[in-house]
Length: 77
Image (cartoon, rainbow, N blue to C red):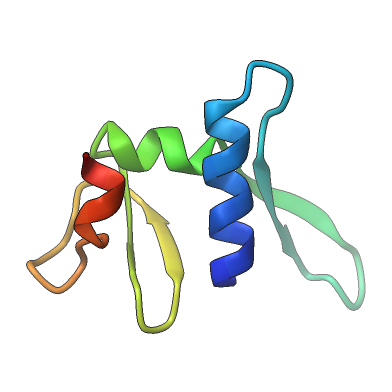
């Protein structure tokens, strides 16, 4: 996930007219199928159910793994 996509997820979370959804596609070259859906990743982040490492923007669902998996404090305000 890029920083720009994360910013769009934040904007959608704050909007009443939009929702940001991440779809993970498996076996994309032969028989593509949706293997995971993440609805409102920014909302999940604020709820402590999603985290990412800012240096590579890897998004994962679940509690924060360690102290290096924290978001810049400006989003927590």
